[in-house]
Image (tube, rainbow, N blue to C red):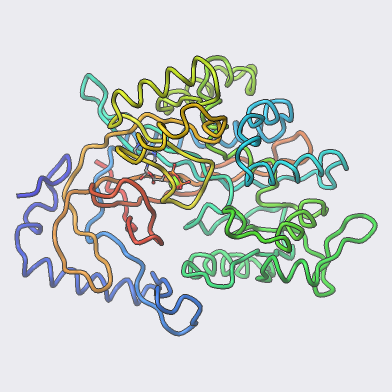
Length: 440
Ligand code: ADP
Ligand code: MG
């Protein structure tokens, strides 16, 4: 028998196989009818071959106190990311060891330096972050919210990014990949904008490099139209860049268009920054005079350790090698499937131990959520109850004009659930599935 969550609301369903099959059939029909869709792996670029996006049969139980805490701290995280993105000295110092070894971060950093040097053409900054958490029990048995990471670029499954007066009737340029399975998530954003009479054009980096140009005021033009806002759903992984795309990214950053996110905000979302923020005293420097926000932020931090060369890094490596099950090794990458666990982590640490390359990774305490039973529905897979864990994401949006924060709010959540046998991986990677919190 599989144990079912903290409370047993779905217990009677989970025991009746026939009833499960019937419920699953109904749920799949509903998902298809509601447009909960993905393109198929076989036909990622075809417009007429789709299947349902994987989702749970039942909403998973999430303590309401943690849901509220995650919402309450989101504006603090927005403030923090924004503060990091404006603090050139902090970014430079924090990433200095990383960029020596990690060419991707170094490349992003080069653009950052270049636009800083030239002077930033735009005074408006548009952030769309998603802070992700898991839940684990404190020693006293009470549930605690622990941050997995913050996503500052291409935070997917949102859809409300540009509901702001500041971008009203702007022409929005959505930078997209050619073969995008998650296109319907992006279309939902486009539709929300269209519903507010904001026009959206969807283009690739290649289109920008072929047809984009800046005028003498650094206004961005594409196909003869001025672009007010650039929204990135591409450009968060090294494989998404070739020389042409790097040039297009630089052009977009140099432009006067509002970027969502701008390059500094993308860098503020690196795992290295996340790790440095957890260091004693750093939050206090970035968010001076905001002790309450600092306390709320810190309460969600898990253990994070620098692997920079030196005593502190040596100590972290020794601890991870002594107890590999308690740690996760993370490179500066987004998109899932890049972290190393267990034996793989041990091998990597042994290999990296004496090289400067280790600074391009961080070490993180492994969060241990309590597993529960649910059914993960996927096209072509049998319906069965498996042990699962969930990851809660809260979306946050803010607009800053110069030094003034014009808007800062939370705009919804995402719950993703996966079987406990998978250490890593998201919905599009086929590991996690879409879920809904059932507050208890
Ligand atoms: P990415 O940028 O690739 O999404 P994440 O830091 O979110 O990187 O890690 C990917 C996945 O790995 C997470 O969704 C989560 O399932 C798992 N994971 C990451 N960090 C931890 C951790 N500290 N403890 C437990 N699981 C983790
Ligand atoms: Mg993630």
